Image 1 (tube, rainbow, N blue to C red):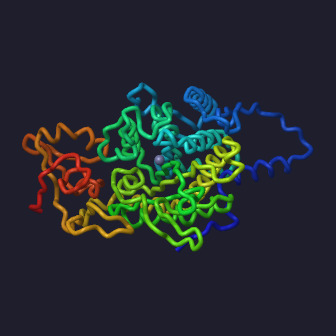
Image 2 (cartoon, protein in one colour; image 1 turned 135 degrees about the vertical axis):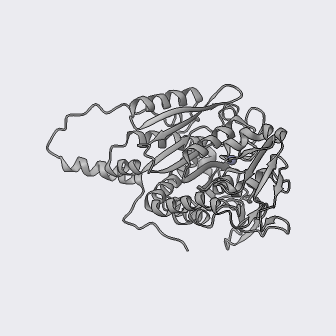
Length: 435
Ligand SMILES: [Zn+2]
């Protein structure tokens, strides 16, 4: 089932260009007194036409200019890295509680810079847009952006942070400042959609598309959230990228270069500590997107800037699909995420400690009749209470320790944190099966 974007409905920024063109044509004989349009900043990447990535001082100056120049933007510090760099959240929109919330997480891996560049120019373009369709979109959508999710890794051009920790394997343990900041944003802002921008290294001819995408495969994501995530990938992001001339496929799946049939899976499993999967467990429609780093054409091999521009432009094309998805399906997205947030209070259904949407869980990995809660000793609770709070898990005092009931919004997450059978559990809680 692959819904298509109606041809009459073009993505937001293309509407912007058309609206501006129409406005100009409508007043051919009048000299419009120029309202002093605020000067729009450009990134280092744009200024150099892709010859270099935007530096972090340039990013700070760029964001400060956007923050000053647009009354619909605010830039907040949400944490500090070990090396003292700011972790920042940019908010664009009217911040109405009723609006849908979209969260872009850009370049969690510091050596994958193109997502960050796409995020920075997207922030500016949304901040300064005056056309009706973009303003209408922003009146109904809170756009949140973490433009540099791993500032120390970006500074050093490394995948991990300054401790060498892969932030995108830390969304359960929450040991890094970076993952903790993101967890707090997810808890407090309750995004309906989380979009995670990465890059990958190609293995031609089996694995070399311009873009790869993947939804949450973890089985604890609700069916509707999982379904909307697949629709985002297959009905919007991939078709929009294709229309812009970019090839795409599913992250982690090698395909036969002649038939296109899948050959093997090398990545993209259901493990809960990857943001793509954590997003689904935390009720958000989620998508991972990966642009190809490698230059495969002679022209790109001869011109690194051309290679860099293709990487960033492919990310921008895919983002158009994300915006169209959010605009067209907001009712269904809201219904899916609201139902997922409420489902835990019914405290029904199995919880999965393994498996994925394309891999059956093994025997013993399914809690068919989960416990009604977990008891933690005082020492256990003291050790992980900050992480439970960041995950939005509630508990009540119990003897000297704490009792974590499953009957809450975070129900499907709790055994992943507290059951000794879960691969990435934080502590061994004592399962309460007396219910
Ligand atoms: Zn990555």
